Length: 292
Ligand code: FAD
Ligand code: EPU
Image 1 (cartoon, rainbow, N blue to C red):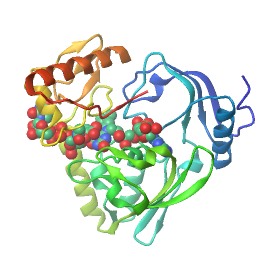
Image 2: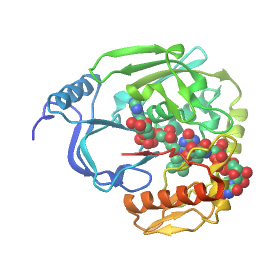
Image 3: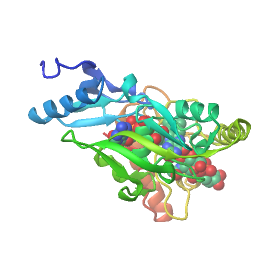
């Protein structure tokens, strides 16, 4: 079907999404499109609506479990140069949503801008981080947001003030939109101080988290007052596997793709963990990752 033939960006059909997720899991999408610019993005939304195709915005796929059956619809990745711009404005940065967090951190180090160091080691794009309000125990990205430029699913571009946006624990009201750019408030600090902070966070991650095998980071949210990892660990589930999916030996809230796992393996392991934790602690573990 030639619905998207008039775009300047890249259009692929029947694409295996396992190539685009950090879990290395996921069936085929009908379409995977990387719009060249805003005009392309608008055309994608219009054509998708006309043809009743659902649109999914994907960043780096680092918080996603895509089902083995794949996606009926259009997966959009904001991966062209148009969506990877960054500039300084006083003590703030204006950054486009397709930029990887690591690129933004490099820019901050180079320009002596502090405030985002806690993001070190979190894979993903700025868009994904804002949608998920990514963060750590120290901070979340929402705290740094002054303004966000978004497109709604009818193709209208709007600017939202921080007061218009709700940020929760790994959640934000921005998910309703396509995030395009954000203005983040930072502080001037020495490169050395910024680098030291980044190194500190990276070290903590290396020591505590599973970074050797494909994963989507923590699978469950921490229930109020508890750590999901500690609860799963206390159930003796480290190393428990179903098919190719396994509870990490290093951090029990990480499920790893140990050996060609399917999404079905991961989902069964999730059910198994939820059941054990409920029986032992009477606590319901809620998913942190998104299942598509
Ligand atoms: P994706 O996974 O591609 O998408 C996630 C959600 O964001 C989807 O709903 C998607 O539709 C939406 N989205 C993406 N881009 C846009 C856009 N432009 N506009 C609108 N919606 C969009 N997360 C943390 O918070 N803290 C951590 O410490 C952390 N550590 C991790 C460690 C590892 C090893 C891994 C693999 C993951 C970790 N994560 C962590 C999870 C993940 O990296 C973050 O949630 C990240 O912000 C997701 O970004 P992404 O670009 O990969 O988004
Ligand atoms: N713990 C165990 N066993 C385990 C894992 C952890 O007993 O297998 C214990 C630790 O010893 C510690 C406590 O649980 O006392 C908390 O562990 P950790 O410091 O690793 O933090 P966490 O609560 O598991 C959260 C975020 C991470 C984030 C870190 C660092 C959630 C669900 N997880 O993990 O975010 O990187 O803090 O700040 O909020 C993610 O969202 O994907 C993610 C990795």
